[in-house]
Structures are given as structure tokens and as C-alpha cells.
Image 1: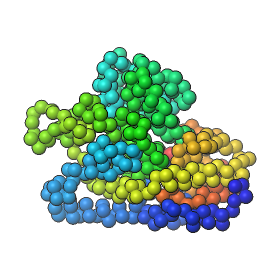
Image 2: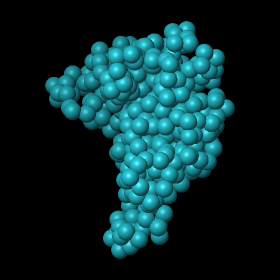
Image 3: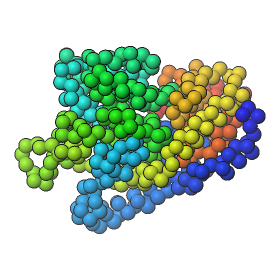
Image 4: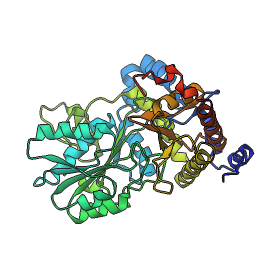
Amino acid sequence: MNNLSRQDCQRLDLDDPLAVFRDEFQLPIDSIYLCGNSLGAMPKKALTVAAEVVTAQWGIDLVKSWNAHGWFQMATDIGDMLAPTIGAEPGEVVMTDSTSINLFKVVSAALMLQPKRYKILMEGSNFPTDNYTIQGLIKLLGESYEIIFAEGEDIVSAIDDTIAVVCLTQVHYKTGRVLEMMDITSKAHEVGSVTVWDLCHSAGAMDVDLNACQADFAIGCTYKYYNGGPGSPAFIFAAKRHHGAALQPLTGWWGHQAPFNFERDYRPATGIHQMLTGTQPIITMAVSKVGIEIATRANIKQVRQKSLALGNLFIELLEHHCGDYGFELVSPRDHTRGSQVALRHDQGYAIMQALIDAGVVGDFRAPDILRFGLTPLYLRYVDVWDAVMKLKSIMTEQTWQLAKYHQRQTVT
């Protein structure tokens, strides 16, 4: 593949069965967007839906829209739409709140299933909000509870009969490494532990099958590979076998068995509704539905195949054209890589800023990681070629050394 030309990439795009989806997204003309693993592109239809919800449903129908336009059922309706993309059944997924709040809910619920165990196993190097959220939870629960951190290959051996909950992210946010959900969940169940999976960097980009793996709980965001928009609500999966037994602690009125009875005391809903808390953000939820619906129409196996192919292309072009510039590949080379490529470089921040200025939009994760998201529904093979060529130019001409690229911005 080292001899692959730009024309070869164009031919790959012509044969791409997912190419038809690109036209459904609003993409900047003069840039290559390699940041869909942080914020997905806007579906064109989202603008029309936003206008409809704001001007007609809110602006004209007002409170009638809770019934007339299904606002009250939206959280579970979208959950049912999303469910097949993660290997779940109808009634096992609900769209609600943020990833962090949902993690608090489901880990709390999981701990209820193991009242005599006090350890939560996590991977300390993964996205910090997961660690921060559970640290806050155990402060509330008391000194008996503790987090046990394990990394990579040591995770399975760390799972024993003292662990109450195994709480892991399927795809590592920095490296893109994929954990074996089936094997880890099986080991957890062998010793009586409950599993919670964070799908933020896998759902919508690869074939996830929660029920085939017998996963207990899962959470994930919708603003990456589902293209739901900035801050779009997250989702919760709870296996039906746990409904009614594992109850989450943020017991708001939307999770009540009969919310419009307005009873004084809480009675939990018996199904996935119990994972709800308060009134949902209807406008952002309605807009997010557009991207999720697109994801349901894509063949997830084709999505995964293209994701790996784009990553392989990126890596091989990088090593051929930029092999002398000090980049270290930190993502796996094989199928254990998610839908991104991560590189290490001691000048990573400045290089990424120079790339963005040149029209290649990726992101940086401290202290030294450049991340490139590969979103198969709208990214082309020729985009990968052009991105690597622009990176080569920046390194050859040493553009990244300009002072303006070393000034840290708030969001990296």
C-alpha cells in the first residue's frame, strides 16, 4: 500500500458502499474533518428538525406538544431506535441526561446487586470523567467502598470475587484500543461481578452486541458517531433481567411508576423508565434523533470494515511519508483498534494546531497525543490521503514551530 496514489484512493471511494451517506451531512468545504470521535458532523436534516421543533411545536403548539408530538415518550422512543445498534432489545435503552450522570446512575444500580461487595474495578488511564464520577459516588457511600485500578492486559486478572462492579470503557479514548467485552464480561460473571460498559467511543462506529456478551449495564454519548449535536443527551442500557431489582438513586418524577398521579412518595417504574430522572431537553433530543436514525440505516459491519480500512490507510501513508519526523503510533495496528488513530509526539499540540490551521481538523490529548477520528459515514479515503500529505508538508516546512501554534487554547 506504500505505493498507493491519490487516484487509487479516489477509486476506493467510488467502490465504497457507504459513500451515499456523505451527502446527508453538512461538511465544511475547505477542511478535512478528522474529529468525529469528539463531535460528529451535523446532518443536513437537523436544521429542518430544529426549526420545526422550535417554531411549530414549541412556538405554536406549546404545552400540547407533550402529547401531540410525543415529547413525553421521546426518551424511550429514541432509546428503542438506538437499541439495535448496540445489540439491545426494545425496552432496554433510554436516552437521557449526560454520560457522567448516567454512569453515576448505573454504577449505583449495579452496586445494589452486590450489597456485600465494596470494590469497583476501573481503568485509571481512561477518560477522566468516569473516574471522577465514581470517586464522587464512593465519597457519598462511605469509607468501605474503593476503586481498584487496572490497565490493559492486567484487567482480567484483577477481576476476582471481591469486585462488585467492573466498570470499563470499550474503546480507550486516547489510544483507540478495544477491550474484549465478551471475555471480560464472562470473567466478571464467573466471580459474581456486575459489568458496566462505557460505549462512548464504540457505539455507532463498530458492531457492539451487549446482549450477546450478557452485559449488565452500559452508557454512552450520542454526539460522536451518532452525530447528535454538541451536548446531545446520552443513553443508558439496562438488561431486562435487572429491571425492578437494580434501582438508580436519582429518583425523579420521570422515573416514577405513575408520574402524573403526583404522589408524595416515590414508586419506581418497573422497566427502563426507572432510569429517567427529570424533564428531558426536548429540543436537543429531537435534533439528535436525526443522526441516530442515519446510523440505524447503515450496515454496521460495513461501517466497521471501512473504519479499519481508513485506519490502515492512515497508518501506512503516515509511516511512508512522515516516518522520519518522530511520530510514534500508539493505536493498535489490527482489529483491536477502534475508529481512530492516535500518535505520540513531544510537539503534538503545536503540530495539531498547525494542522487545523491548514484545514485538517483533529484534536490533542495531553500530554502528547494527536488524535484522528475516522468516521466512515462521511469520511473518504481521499480525505485520509490529503490529510497525511498536509501533515507531511507541515513537518517538512516546520510550520508547527510558529509561535502562534504553541499558545494553548481552552479546548484542545
